[in-house]
View 1 (cartoon, one colour):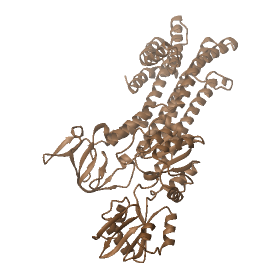
View 2: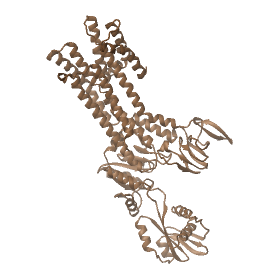
View 3: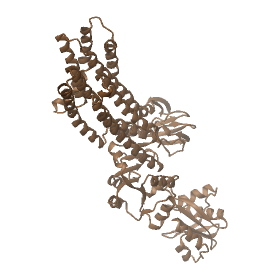
View 4: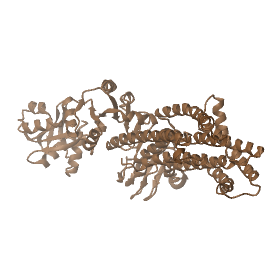
Length: 632
């Protein structure tokens, strides 16, 4: 029977017993009470006996042990009193204890259900069917019937069924449900789309590239499930405490009985009630809930933010991080060069000549120059006598006159005076690649190209510093360019001219000075991510490297590094707070239950002790739920 149903069944049986506690009498009196209490003890309480027996067979004790012992003492004493014809029986005590404990467990399940609802919400995001184009016809199919390579039609307002690549059409897509990104993303032919996201405006067709467990949403769900089922190392502390705590409590209960009965001259019944109260209130249920509930809430909230925390161990690693190392290209920077400056008396002419010369080039910077010309509405014009000179640049005939784009060496070869030497040097100091543009034998201008920092990087670095962390940058770029970029984003520690294979070695070097978090793209930086104390893999659309880092950021947003570390810290702090509260509650409750304060009239009835114990567990779960309200 489910805990909820078992609780209400037990409640119905215990209400008549509760009536006797306020002075009422039942037909058959003690015998009726015995019948009701027996059903509660051995039907409703069967789960506690099973749990206690299972622990006993492994020569251990647990929370069920305390509940079984406490309720059994009250129940069997009452059976003895009934048979012996004694006036006072306490059947209501054992029954109410079980009822209150079941109520606490039901509340725990309710609150834990709220904590783990992130999985349900993610599952609800999945589309159920899609319009597939087969043999030129539109067919509605369930998502599990779609195959890789199928062409799917998506209309405005529809949910995208699977991950894929747009073939025809364009639209803006709301990806917030999966990535946490609130601004719709513009998509065109060649763009990737993510299953479960919402198409906003246009219609388009896309080819399914990932289905089933390979889709981004399925990977997210798998990660969250794995994290919520994991155990943080600090849980070992709670388990160890519980292992010692239960036998100690049983010993304290025996000592409580002996002190009251043998030293203070109390009746067997009074001494027994004090001992039972000690056993019940000390039940460390809250201790067992402190870690897993906080872990559930923290990882669930992270999933909603597009931050996937892979395990409880990650939370502990995040708390002592000293250095946060960033890969430069694609992590701090956009990963593609753009034209940042055009210098010259006639900038339009500079852009037009440069684009015309680069149109036939395969140089990595050519696309940046062509994109800049397109923004200025300059279409490349045909050139003649095109010649690419390795390591220097391009020469050709443009409008019948000689033209070139290249470096200082090319100008010297062509005997063209560098009249903008000061401007060129200043741009180079900023870490930019500067190309001279000449036409008709004269220098007409400069074009500076740079792989620019992503938006928000500077703010992210400042936020990390406020958290007491020191950001560092590692790159294969030359020292000059690396330091120029680092200066722009507020990073002082720079490791440049490092081969990909050497990144892990540099991480090891940093680890000698303090714990290191490494932030990379999760693919090229896999060795460094694994070597770091905490690996943070930056996701990019559907290409998430699930196994690379301890934390995976679905959005390619460096600001999420800060959020991930803040969430990890706050979740771990909540675990520590829960553990402290659970231990404090038990330690503080035992003396009161033992009757230490009975001299001032403070005495805990075992049933009230059971109620207090049940609500201590609920309070710990509620404390974990407050993580959803903490500012990240």
